[in-house]
Image (cartoon, rainbow, N blue to C red; front, side, top):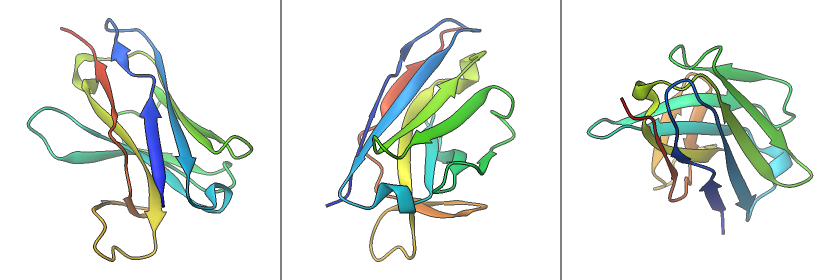
Length: 129
């Protein structure tokens, strides 16, 4: 069974930093492209970043480019997202997800780099105004 457990969120002032983690199990992590997405209050799910299975290729949404860094440790089956220079508009629940070959009844979100699903409970990031 695929399991993704996000952690590391919190309350941080504007301009601050956080590092999110995602512990993966139930699938071959080092063969899977991974993604982070977020959902702000009252809004839909928005993809944030994608990293290829080997870790050397990654992509970012324009809204976070230059401030967020995605990485992975395939030996530890863990995905990371470093959030720097946080803004109030970054306030959201953050989720990690694995790439899907098809939806097959799994909730999924779309990125320019494929479909992703199986996200966990998420971790809350709050940047107060």
